[in-house]
Amino acid sequence: MSVVIVGGNECMTRQYKDMCESYQYKAKIYPKMSTGLIFVQIGEIYSWA
Image (cartoon, one colour):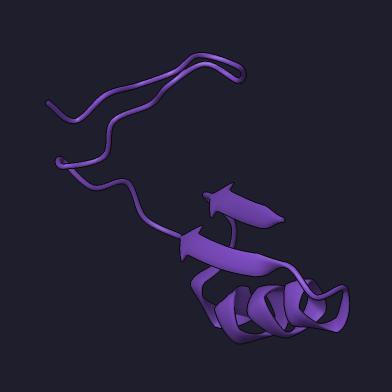
C-alpha cells in the first residue's frame, strides 16, 4: 500500500516515513505545497496521457 502525506511539519518528515515503513507502506511526504502538485480525489482514475 502507498501513503501520501501532504502538509505537516518538515522536522517530522523522517518520522512520518519511518512510521509508514514500520507498517510496510510506501510513503511520499510533501511537507510544503509545491506548484507542480496535482490533487486527485480518492477513487478517481487519473491518466498522464
